[in-house]
Length: 106
Image (cartoon, rainbow, N blue to C red; front, side, top):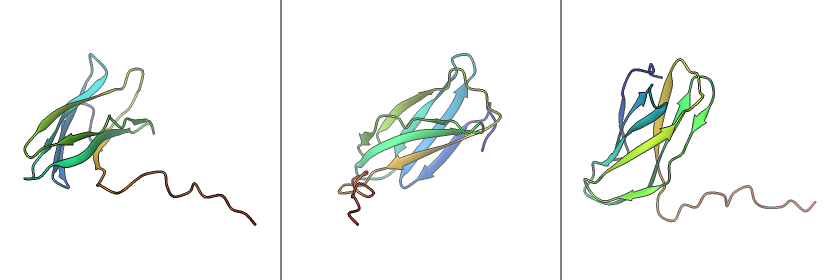
């Protein structure tokens, strides 16, 4: 967790996420950057606030090698002491929601 006035930066699975909080607009803004030499599919960003609120995820985007994309999450009306962020990379062929949708017939 980082303080509200600190900038969060992390490289994970080839994605560099840089994010900071803007008190005036109550938004988290920053960028995601593909640090690899290949396209990375379906990258999204989420923020976890110390009050338990989760913001996001952002709309997934595919980044070509070296491409940078701006991200923004609204935190209007939220009160928090610290926060953390993460990027999620959805790989080809991995579909969410398939598990747990089976009905039990006993």
